[in-house]
Image 1 (cartoon, one colour):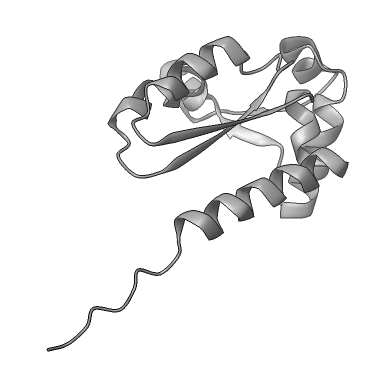
Image 2: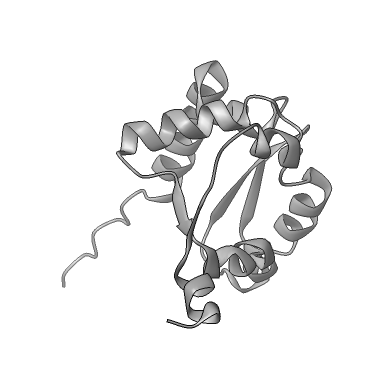
Length: 138
């Protein structure tokens, strides 16, 4: 096997030694991610070849093309997904709705912030997924 193939196929850890906390500015990031991976039974590894894809991932760019109702749950103090950029993308969605939260990025995964977020998402879905009235038959 040549060196290039070896590097492409290598798996690298996602977590460790506070890397996420440093990168995302939240010391709880590694701990929360490790708990989530453990619950899911997922290994703390990713193929090295996907790192550039992950780094360049910007789903907000497609918001203007989403024609169905879409809910944007935005953290006012997010260190991972800056709120200003998210709000700019959300404003381009033709049927977008925005909910803002005074919580950090990783607060969305646990505790009361998680509960509030889920309540808001359920309310959005219940309101937007109401069945249409049955068509009358002549």
